[in-house]
Image 1 (cartoon, rainbow, N blue to C red):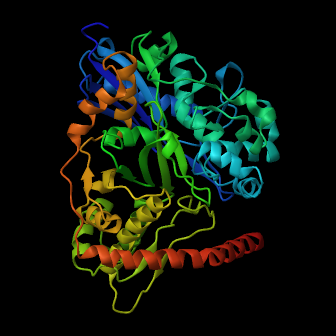
Image 2: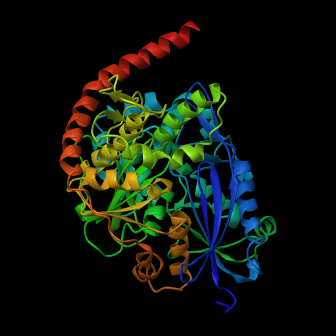
Image 3: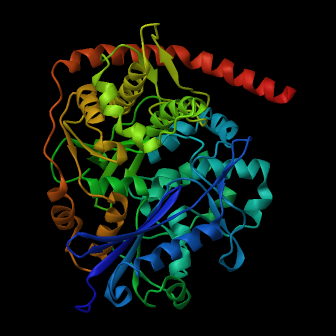
Length: 524
């Protein structure tokens, strides 16, 4: 490796933004270039994204780094990729997209999920993958396509996830990584495809669509001349295929630093809650929910439960305030309202109301799966004001996090926190007390891009193994532990009991409301 090659670029292709982040070989962030992308939703539950546009946005983000980093191209030692998980990105002849990608937000596979989940083969599938079925996953989406639009699969040669599609465009290689391969179609113990899982999904005749599995800490591929021209980087630059964004973010934020009993939550648009364990310590819950996602460390996996909506709940309640203020002629930005949350929390009493944060139109997937689940506010009285509603919503995120960790078995001992909401002092206090554990915030700004860049750093020999890379890239960026407020712990213990009881009781109500929506839709 040339002495001039002192940078690694991590690409994090999210649902709405693609970021290219330059790090030096010691893990210091040098520059960020980002491009907003977009997706389209339909009344049928569809959520799709242009594959060609996504590649163009990725190339633009990489070119943008050259405007911020002197002599970028000759300094790049490697490029690494991560991206939004689940979903289905179909490629046909000549590496061309067959159709727009079905995103993880797409809910059209719900009937197929219900059918497959009721099969006697589903428990065996869950025991292998450690992952509950939901509409987000490629396995469910392919099974649904096979029933309703088999022509799409007939004309497809490979089924990718987002980062795999970008890897193809950068290297010309069709591949996926062990994390998405195992939690969708394989076994987390050996990180290979499983005949049992593929049969349980009814996809034996579609197995040809599954790409080879490669590990980006051990193998890199060369940037093609065409991709070099598109990105402004050097042909032949090593490219590492990272793992799915959830575990890359957690790796960069400190889910594994060699300390027992740690966990990591990413509180962004969605809520991702995970803990690192050895494969033999995985707790497979009776309802069959959550994910088990491999880390790029031998025999180490993450147990994961994910809320469909986290800060989306806060966005909703603040948007209502914006609308009301706009009707009276006042203009207040969303950012201004976000800055007031801690103040509203200080003017409200804890545990006064109960909020279930199921605001997503796709329902919920962790720690239970119900596409009909919807948000609810319980305990409202005439004395409550907007500050109390804000507190209830924030406390609902704490209850949802506790619900997810409870489904993984023994509660962790410390929480590492990342995501935009981690900046909120009030949210950190709620999480610490709701989970009854100290919270540490990672100061890593772009944890997902850092996680995959760490894989590339190991692959090119900058570090002998992932443990030594974690010690330099991750551990020093963890802040001081913030202890839970002892007065809040019993308040949130009681609130959580009510949260679970109410959630369980609401399932038939959600189903009735869903049936009513269908009836109304048929009449209009």
